Length: 318
Image (cartoon, rainbow, N blue to C red; front, side, top):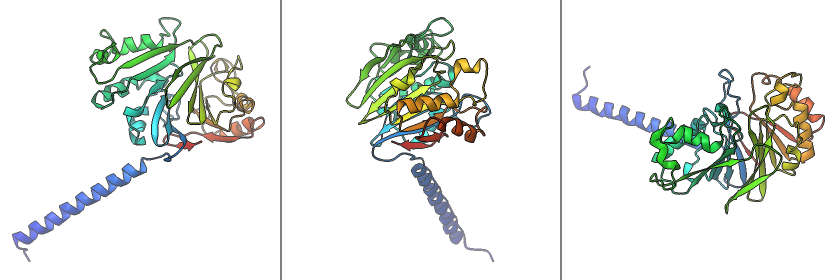
């Protein structure tokens, strides 16, 4: 039987409306499920738990620090972290600083993506990008990297205005070099919300920093990649609520890897000496994935606190 044209139109409209309602419902579910962190207190969201390898299934190192449901500090901007940032529900308007532990692509590769996207953002607050000083043409400083990327003669000259003293984007970017040699603590960033400090760490011949973020009445130390040859992290991270370290090599590692990274047993000793309440293991490589129980045993020989193996999208409350 052939239905009247008016009936077919009504049924087509109902199917269309049902599809729209289903799409809206799925979008709403996705939006609500993207909220990983709690509404109160300090939280560390893992935007990237990988090591920059192409086959580890994770974004490169990046951590978002929340306080009372407001994202305040981004530590490292590894490749893939911008997508995770969007999923987090955070607003780039509230980010006060991007602190970089080092300037290699696996820690800074998404900087152009963040700053390019921020052109259409409505922020007015100045953005500070703070990272290690350089020591050669192969290892430029943070300010030099910003010029190479965004200067008038840089890779993305259309963003050059953002790093000028007077910017017309609605906000200005300030880049700051932190000494990446010696053992002196740098502590020249403080706002009404956040206090940042840093110390140099030994990571082969790559200038690198560890960061301490004090926010509310709690602290997070993101040590980045280090081999602990100078044993500076334990004192720098004293009594921190969360110590975030790189779990890049297994306990049986030998040779050049030990110039770059601390073994799990060393990480356990550092966390114990620091009296850290929890240790979060990021920068997880294909060398260490699948060996978590072995690594945990090596750490627990010295450290009795909580040990958390990070994955993309997780958020840990302090």
